[in-house]
Length: 556
Image 1 (cartoon, rainbow, N blue to C red):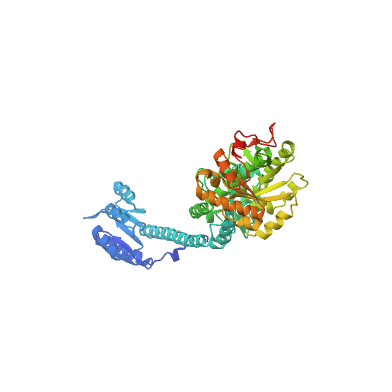
Image 2: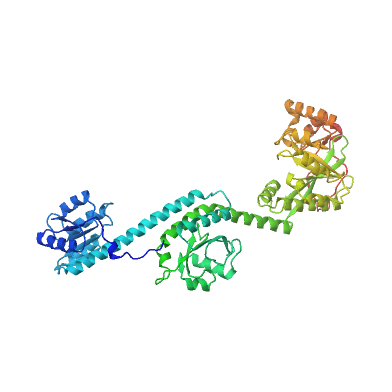
């Protein structure tokens, strides 16, 4: 993929050179000299005819007189540069020896070079050779760039952007090394703390860095600061001094652009040019910059998500380490006697965040079991110290917590009866496995199905798990005294509970009318603000064994 100068023998083009001049003798002279040098020619006697001819024929270069009737050289130039087909066509302007103003006007109009009359014939051939060589080299660069862009397009089509940034980066590395003829390639990312970490490394030349292993802090900061200034090159000797390159490899460093600062760095290596270090890379730096933009566009969303994930994980870790949450306990009451039979443990967070959102965020950060374990530990410790020994402790647990090893260790040695509340809002894929896991926790651990009537599996949890208790969702309880349809539903569940020897517990009992309706429907247990608000488990209490609720005896 290296670009080399094009020998004069390869400059010859089947397309002719167009000679435009209103002097016939000068046209014939230029034609003879150029044909002797091996070029084909065409002639036009003024600018208007030259433009007509160029609409019909392709030429390799125009030798253009500056002063002609009807349309002069600068006028022809402006017309040529306005056309897509001739925008880059090489043009040499021929002017009088003293016509400095014509030269300036011609160069401003787009001439590539000029000759002054009387024209030295050797100089004429040399200038034509130089322009054709330059144009051929430029065309070669464009063609090479076009081919490489096609290869890049193919790479992009084969890379799956829905994978993790590491997998996507490795896919890019594996595809780009052969596609672009690279010796080596690495994709580095910058973290918020300044660390630079290679996502993927590949190629034939060892860059002496490994994917997933952060660079030394000083080197990471150097690269981050340098990347903010744009792309740069390092010749093989400088790259080897930094421990980055192999035996004869130059490196190009191209920032991966982000919204406010570079997301990372693309490092690409090619063998150094023999007499011109880094020419092979510098000639392709624009292409590499486009490549970096493409990679950043694909990797950016995943990197942003990873950064957010890391920040969320750190926040959850700090939350767990600092214990910035408190167990609260709400009494579960026998609606026939007012006796407190148990307490549900709830977790409240110091920052005021809703518990369900906090636990969901922890699960998404991969720390759901850790936060649950910390909350359960706090609840058990506070409950042991504060709650009446006659009351059971009810704990909300996720399916993942039951499946993990945490729960068995946390509940080991507990003498107080424990009820595990499993919500209906979560699907269970294997009821038999869940039953085995719950049974392994021991005889002092029971099961309650929480949020009955509001969840994913409707009554299936109840049928499959055969729980000790079923908790009626607050959506069924609120306003039950005035809703015959819900009364009929709860009456049916009460009948089922009696037959299956299940405790039916109404959640969210807030009015005496709701309490009276529930009692009349055969619901024997409840919790809610009417029966007792949640209290700080680390507070002084009191923690009564019976609820003395005003008007309770009238209802009973």
